[in-house]
Amino acid sequence: MRRTPRPALPPPRRRAGAPGRRAVPVRRRHRRWGRLTAGAVSLAVLATSCGGWVVLHGLGDAIQRVDAIGGTERPADDGLTTFLVVGTDDREGIPEDTLKNVLHAGGESCHCTDTMMIVQLSGDGGRASVVSIPRDSYVDIPAHEDRATHRQVPAGKGKINAAYGMGGAPLTVRTVEQNTGLRIDHYLQVDFLSFVGTVDALGGVEVCTAKPLKDDYSGLDLPAGTTRLDGAGALRYVRARHVDGSSDLGRMHRQQRFVAQLLHQATAQDVLLDPARLSTVLGSVLKSVKADKGLSGDALLEFATRLKDLSASSADFATVPVSVVDHQVPGWGSTVLWDTKGAKALFDAVRHGRSLTGRPEQAPVVSAAPSASAAGTVPPGQIRVQVLNGAGATGLGSRVDTDLRTAGFATTGTPANADGPAGRTAVRYDPRWDESARTLAAALPGAELVRTPGLGATLQVVVGADYRGVAGVSTATPSPARSSGPAAPSAAPAAAAASDPTVSAATGSDISCP
Image (cartoon, rainbow, N blue to C red; front, side, top):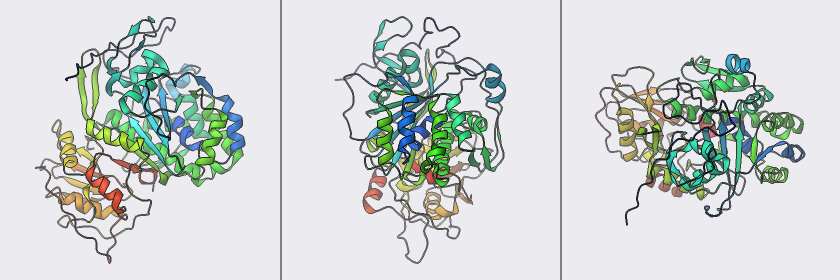
């Protein structure tokens, strides 16, 4: 029996008694900034990864509480601990001069969750998974009571970031649970102050980029290389969405890199093992964070005991794969459609607590430059690929991403524009992943191999005007006498990756600075 498609809901209206707050409008806002979950993710991952139980127990009472978790029709308890971490556009308590001149965050609040991440902590305490959800995802929104009129609203469809304006934290949680099938155990909500304070308490955080990054809207202006950012500078980095054509999708990847780098730096500096310094960091995070009522000091203590050894190398990062990045809907404007098969594969892996990368933690080995004509030894399903459109043809990036995914490669699902025109297709690769580069180049006849030290585990395909499609790939048997980049996974994960290439992820070590 065919199901009747759910109608699109109208965007949320302004709540009574809330002058100056603007609901998500019909037209696309010129300055609708993405808001910051990195500070709250650091609470979900960083704060639960330490032995400073006295600090956690004392600071647990400082968190502002919100009634976020509830309802009867919920996904089954999977035995894991899953956080929903959101960043809202709330500027309350921040002077206008600071917003405009320091944080570059002028304009009105949209009263929505412009950034959203799912953070899952494994049952044995050895791993964390972080999944970014595109804020403009067009999803099913459950029936709820309208916050402005208090009338019952039937189930329908809308942007996932609008659920907060429609029904607050409870509807946000229910919407995520319904569309992902994941049971949310805890809810964290962060604003500007907690993010800036956390970075400053750590003494700043280093970020790295292979090319300069400039965004006049957020105030970001980074040179190529490694730069240490203070809280305000880090805010500009994770907010930037006008750096290139990738917009919000590219911003999500930068946010993930920032969280990975923050976790790497905190563990390297032994912040998690220093109760005094940890108290300063967590105090900055918690003073502006809102959490569900179940996230008590005792709950934080339990997480600390389980996850004291968590590090960047044991944290996986992924983004919900998308099939359409500009799906126009009357009343909502441009929305994002998920890749149904890829999203299901990703959420199934999270639900069962599996590693999203499907490979063991082992340092890569540097080898000589590969030949584009020789097949690599790494199967396509184990190779993460970012597609960049350098030919200028509209929609070509999405087509190549689909072509490579169909051929078995683990593409990101978020193609972007290249930083300049390209006549010839190129494969950019970190020399440590040379065998992966061989396999990818074999699928793109005529492609040029470009060594890019520091790029990490995600290879880049810059699509040129010469692109003619993807060829079939057969991998070679690895020679024991030759180094072949990162060691291949064990048989079981390798088979899973090959049969299900739609789960694309990287560890925190892969995406943090070398």
